[in-house]
Length: 139
Image (tube, rainbow, N blue to C red):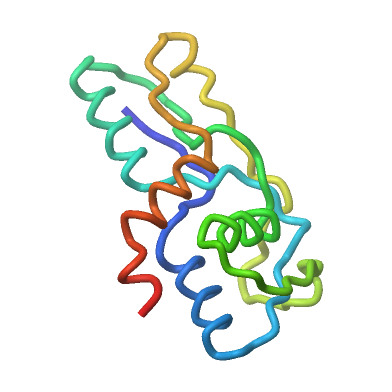
């Protein structure tokens, strides 16, 4: 069995954004890269379910819905009830060694087809992640 995912929603991006905020940096976040943020806990639960069902093949497993990094950041601060000025920017404003795809959206087609899709909406997963890790993230 193989599982393909889009973007991992975890401490790296979120912690980086929160650190920039805490350090008084202006938040300029890319708005032209789209994906499906995925909470690792949801991915683990989905993987366990597939293993228990003895599934084989290739599965896309991403939290439901599409967003970009800017929208994700706006939602992050909305959930944390923090007012902050976030400026949208373009990928070209942040040169990187690795070229990032502008559209890395996946659909859980095979999970849905087999009625095995446990993946939640990315906004619900983000809220769960933030509430579960709030103390660690806000240090």
